[in-house]
Image (cartoon, rainbow, N blue to C red; front, side, top):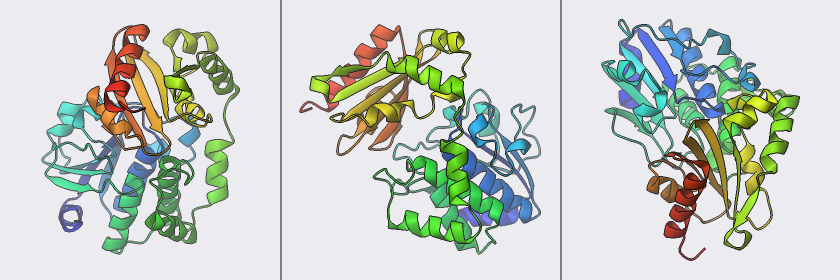
Amino acid sequence: MFDEVIEVINSCSTFLITSHARPDGDALGSELAIYHMLRDMGKDVVVYNQDKTPAVYEFLPGSKDMIHFLDSVDGFEAVFVLDCSDIERVGDEKDKIGSIEKIINIDHHASVGTFSEILLVDSTASSTGEIIHRLMKNMGVTITEDIATNIYTAIMTDTGSFRYSNTGIDTFRAVADLVEKGADSRQIAKNIYETKPAVQIRLMGKALDTLEFYEGGRVGSIYVTQKMLQNEGALSEHTEGFVDIVRSIDGIEIAIFYYESSKDLFKISLRSKETVDVEKIAGKLGGGGHVNASACRVEGSLKAVKEKVLGAIRTVCNTL
């Protein structure tokens, strides 16, 4: 499982690292962990993301080294595409990135595509960060404090602070090792969960004003439009975690968050608490993810998009 990836790491000297647009904690932590590992090995490394790092993650070691403009990929022998089930998710530079000779795809999504021949994928893992921790343990590299901080952040955020069903025994073993290597669990949690800007709280209030329930209260949704962002002076990053507010409501089995990314285009975040497989719902709409956390993009007016999403839910969950 790890041999082919390790062979590329050992044989190449110039690497690009990237992940999906609008990167989250798992994407950023995973990228920066690989970045520090390769740098420590004497490799030439560049981390590229289409979108800027959300302010809440700027504390991560190495975050200031990331670039957001990709002029050319000439000279890169290999690229790590992390936490991406499809090359399309890296954004506008997908063709450039996809032209690099060796593409290493490390991911934990069940819906992973086939854009790379070098795969390190485990849909039972809590996060891409957890898989990277296993890779480093197999390689026998030194996990520094910077690496530990990044991987711990990746795992913590993608498990909802170890609350989600993707949190297993191996997850806790990994984070115990990371704390031993220098990850400050308290400080990381403080940076992510206790430093929210006032604008985010105001936007949250506006989003909660849109709260609606369906299917006898078992499905709930909220939305944020571009106009709402403009009125509050907010950014897209300020919507992170909004879907989890809906999931936390008693009786909710499926939580939906509609985010208007541009006119008549919505990113849909889906969450479930127990046995409902929202990956199947997202799949009906061209997306993917995990059993309890998935996403997709749907075109149309807000009303039309709501009807499409609710229709997919009713098709998949005919006994809901």
